[in-house]
Length: 289
Image (tube, rainbow, N blue to C red; front, side):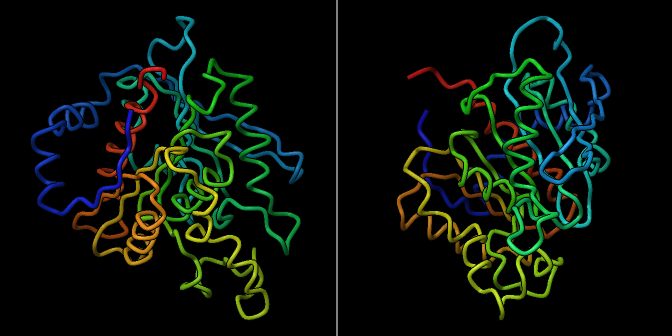
């Protein structure tokens, strides 16, 4: 399967939604009650942070029939918790059935930004996600234990986290996405308690430079990671997403880039996540090379 860099203008997005798969997605996400996906809340233990951490795990309707399933890790934004996605978009359970995927919504605390803090040893969310949660899911569920069977995405802080973790761990994830992601945190040094995790940008500028997604693109190899990035034109993160898109173009990194009218809102993410699941399904089902 080939992935390519594309900036989709608003009219093209509307056309795609109308003509390609809008009817199917509307049917699935509106009438999710007809599906039989199972939604559980599990508790995992983080040795790195010496505490229990919860996650929502959604398994598809025929999970018990014996096959192994791909996994999509779906990250929440700042100020939210592990239950955010299933509370605001209960129809995501239907995606587990439709695409035969396991969906995992971990708790990234309200302001973790999903990295290990260089100034506070109590915050090791990169270690938790990569070395503790992913192995726990693979041990306790029937998963495809390979990067070809794992994808990660999220909204806002979770969009940053998904790209940050996937860029740094391409051996773990084969596909990644972002919705309204904070893909460059440097323009927001006073927001979302990021300074508590990295130190102030005035005193520790190196921490901000090393832990912002847009500076991690040199880690990518062409076609090493299937990428889908989505942001609304009225979003306060719109400019940094366009900047990331243009940098990926300049570095010849294939990716899908979607923009359309919308802001930093749940209605936008409720729509955006449909395209993320479809994209990952295509990735998971591509023929073996």
